[in-house]
Image (cartoon, rainbow, N blue to C red):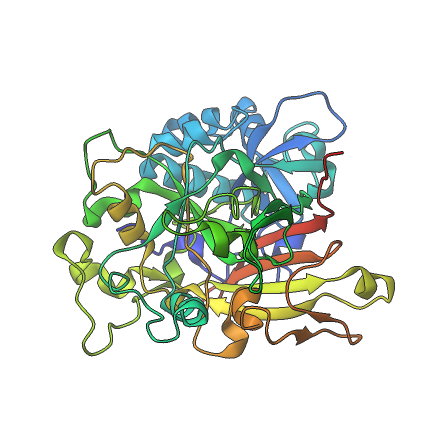
Length: 446
């Protein structure tokens, strides 16, 4: 399992990029997440870069300036591509070498970047001057159901006598999503239409969903894949994970309720999934590794292929995910987005390593850039519930917003903002940036 803590995690180290040293900054020197960007004022192809404070490190341009050597140079060369897929396929040694090299270039006192002609716009442009894009070509998207709290809360709405299905504590449950509709933060979300059956109706109707929901999740990008027919070992599963982002798996709950039996979600979720543009690497997350929640008395122990063994005390990751809502009325009245919920990935029943191991356990091949979702991250308390389905008890108990508005589910014009961060004693706080999406009215055919 990756996760060695070294000088790149030292909270006392500062960057010469002053904005990276500000309290509460998502992208300090200790983070250095990777993404894909394109300058707004230039006719150039997208390329890979890193986030530092309010700037972007153009990794390929730094390589062109001769600022990398050895394995880091190989990794940096892959960042000239319009996606991070080739970098993801190089493996953890290359990822670590690149992170350490970029860290050294940005460390306070290092002058190599600033000694390069045109460095402000060429090597570290301001983030406001670039467009952030989906960081990889996503071949496949699989969304899991790894929060016991969410599974129990959602199940209780539909099966009060048996909220948790018998297989849940034995096997990580998932559905295969729609990779083509994964969009980057800031992309507007069109309200989907679908077939629904009202509680008092005998026949279904087709029309815009009346129960549009968000799901606060984490996304895990696959790095090195596995060949078809070859499974993964739990001991080295994380060598196949490149990093993490925030993920909002938008859901039409009324469509989902009608269509999901017997094969699971389809059109209720395939219309859009939003992700944050920056991928926080597992190397950066090393200080925030935690043990997965202890199994309750009477719970089955993981089968051998899912058992982390001695590595179980660092098999989880503690990320706090917050969900905020901004309505048109709130924006018109100058009211800041209100926080709906906050959850912690440390409470997930299944770990990232278990998700990837199980995914490949039947010999299913995975490829660089494939995306795995954690499923809704919920916790034990009401304010830890990561979707409106839980918060409003299936729409039966509307929530009241600042200004007096109420919501059972999302209305047109509403904007959902996910934010995430990690904190641990003695280490710098790191963040994920934001994952935003605003709801547009449904498209109606004439």
